[in-house]
Image (cartoon, rainbow, N blue to C red):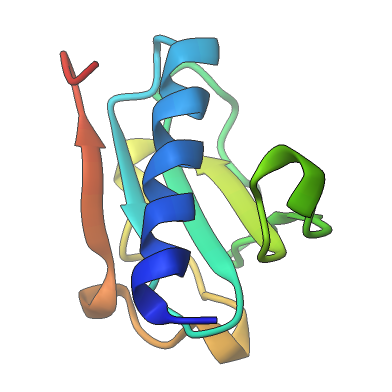
Length: 104
């Protein structure tokens, strides 16, 4: 699978997450060649309570045009860049902003 296809799926999921939860202010993608990795910033959720990011994982679903597995986490904006990422995700400075307030 190409990184371009992964990014396309990431953008689709970011948009769908933003549509489902309008309170999300930004969505970031952590580029990878095999998995979509997203973090959404949502001010009205409780703080993580730990110093680690815990994403939800989803299997690929080719029938739904989602050929790659994905992982998604929602955190408070002030936790961005602070929480420890899963090992394979890299560093916070590698995050690519995909969606911001007002983007539809």
